[in-house]
Length: 285
Image (cartoon, rainbow, N blue to C red):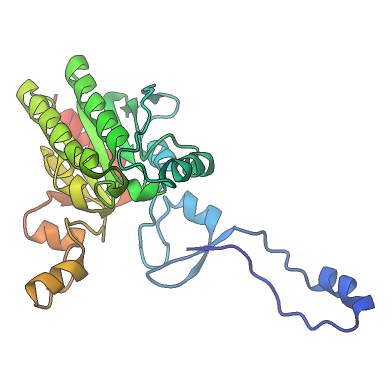
């Protein structure tokens, strides 16, 4: 949660003194420099937080990361080459505001879509990497996201490289209807080709990973990792509770709960993620 402004209370006198009093009482704290931890509620200096891998120093809460910062954390500096794919988003349901919303998000985030894909090195080990970004329509999977994931998997097969996908998504993109749901089958079919080719496939489930992404390529990794306390599932807890009419277990759908029940292989702190991935790559040689 970004705290845009922190202001001191001001009691203004008459109109003649108002401007001077504004200058005198104006806060010297820069706008947008502070964030609030959703878990422990502490106010944190944003730059210090970024230097700590966007992990709260008080409670260890892992903040959500942009795809750009994720790549910076995982890939050796200067080695990432993003795939240049000219794929345009369709509007099959002809929703009047959909394309306008996409254009606004592209300008705001600097992203073309909700996933960044390319090739880079992890401690000099070359991999294909896909990083989903929840800042772009909650990382939802539409036609373009599905195609970019599929292209990346096929590129890994072609180049005989391992592939790592960082998942962060609310699921299939409802604005694209059945076209978005078809991406589940397409990406899953591509993963089957990958398995037949014998390439290592690692998925890393981050907060949140839900819906059609969980039900397709996110759950098909040879090795499935997750960040601490990441929420992972298909439907949300409220929907499940209403459907079955029962209270859910404590910690339900957290990475730790899923590790205990065998859905994932390891919960990895973000600070240790690069080294963990590197070790897995070396074991695969």
